[in-house]
Amino acid sequence: MSSASSLCLTQAASHGAALQSAKAGLTAASASTVCCRTTSPSSSFVVVAPTATSSSSLRRLSTSARSFDPVLPSSSSSSSSSSSSSSTFLAGDEKAFREEAMALGSHGGSPSSSPSSTVLRIYASASSKRLQGRKLRVAVIGGGPAGGCTAETLAQAGIETFLIERKLDNAKPCGGAIPLCMVDEFQLPADIIDRKVTKMKMISPSNVEVDVGRTLKPNEYIGMVRREVLDAYLRDRAASYGATIINGLFLGMKIPSDKDSPYVLDYTDYSVDGVSGKPSTLEVDVVIGADGANSRVAKNIDAGEYDYAIAFQERIKIPDDKMDYYQNLAEMYVGDDVSPDFYGWVFPKCDHVAVGTGTVINKPAIKKYQTAMRDRAKTKIAGGKILRVEAHPIPEHPRPRRAKGRVALVGDAAGYVTKCSGEGIYFAAKSGRMCAEAIAEASENGAKMVDESDLRIYLDRWDKKYWSTYKVLDILQKVFYRSNPAREAFVEMCADDYVQKMTFDSYLYKTVVPGDPISDAKLAFNTVASLIRANALRKEQKKLSLLSSAAASSK
Picture 1 (spheres, rainbow, N blue to C red):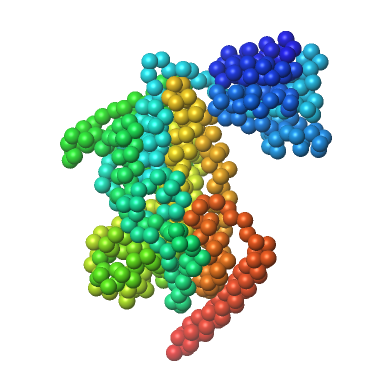
Picture 2 (picture 1 turned 120 degrees about the vertical axis):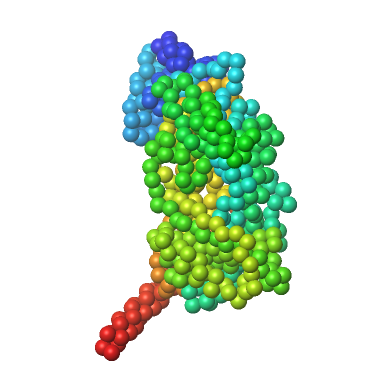
């Protein structure tokens, strides 16, 4: 290693302990050139090292680094060199960081700027400091699936964790459907799942019914849960790992003026007096907003507004013989009568059904849509008694800002609900876990302070994993929910076994399932054909409407 590059590495390492192991690991690998440069303001480092550096040395480096991303040294490198390096390119301002690192590494005639070198970007905050005599303190605001899973993962990592939730018996209006992968991934016990749905009916505006679920394997199902049961279980599990659960109402927080001072949270503590409560404060290093679509944490960091839907649901106790019909069956209704831009549902619970609908574009009419929903299902829920009426906002897309300083948003607070399906439970739990994992990694299990760049690692991972899912479902909603003829086409398509298999496989396991090219081509043709028929039908309906209006006005 040249003296110039060695000096550069030592200077960079003085700002972050992660690079101490980088120096040792890469030197042990007999790397001829290593150089680093702090890349403010993102608080990361650029490292240049030969591609011949051993994988074991790179593992040693990445063990103490917060994130580890190899990137190509130059877009102008030969195609042959590209094949032996990473496929990720630097862009924008990072290009300048790469060039600086290359220049530093080339001192003393080193070969670091040649195509045989690799640039490594290590996220290791220059501002992080090791906490003395205590662990990192994190407050999670909100006790739903997002908050519960955040608190659980933080507590498991040894981080001092506080979860604040006002309604510990909360029953959020929610269809309560969870994918099969969530049961295993989050180790959910069987007794919190009310029903295992293996059959669904898609019901068109003209009441054409299509049975869905023929492609499910014997062990596959959609789980139906009550939110008050699921949420309580996840909070209790977080508490079992050491999280402190506070029955309190979060009011707001004071933002610190520097990078090390605590956030001061104001809340009303109802732990002792469940009626009037006690004004209280809490000082923490990090705040995670898991407090839903109306997030007060989001307002505190000016996270921006977003479109939201109103979900309206009634829990209805129906006679036993009718409940038998819904034993393992769920229904979804589409049509302008039940929602202009969403769908209505009848989902089975332990001893009742949840009947509901939602809308974004006509929220004042939500009760009218709910009445129509009950009317569409009236023969199947006749004799039922309404046990509970629930309504709640549901976000339609991610917020413009999801992290600021040492504050991050997860779940509904961040806007993680899919369009078209309205699914949010799995993504809430997953985002909470991913955020907590990023904090645990960055803080070395609570030993060090974190900053915004650490929280943005969670956002980068989230967007990379799920952005395409949200985009595809957004497109589907715009295509198939725009008119009744389009909805008829949508239900017609659901009768296809290939559509059912692809849909269920993607939903149950939250992975992009590769399709068969021939079947994909047939599906594309059938989709176009269905949309053409829907468009023709819409035009005919418009003509009939105009004729009816003309006839009425002539009388």
